[in-house]
Image (cartoon, rainbow, N blue to C red; front, side, top):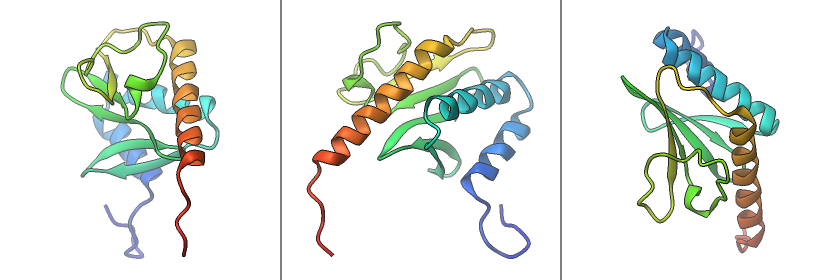
Length: 137
């Protein structure tokens, strides 16, 4: 998608377009997750990667929002390192790094628990970023 001036559309506009294009429960779910992401972390940065995947970042990837025919998959980049007291993670449980939440049509999102998980991911990213040695220019 290119705008009239030849510049690429912003990631946020591409995510808007994806939500509109889906035009079903998946778009509604992605829009809801996006709103919760912004409520949990007002400094979140939206990206568009891997040929069409919405990505939310803050000092590193928080999670991706992939849409499939039967599921909206929220993959947390460092999910295996996060406390999940509400048991939201229900997919990609075998890996050493990532964890995912598969949301199916009709599923109710535990908004409080999801926002807590987002905040925990941001805290982990910012603590990791603080520990990384700074590159010299």
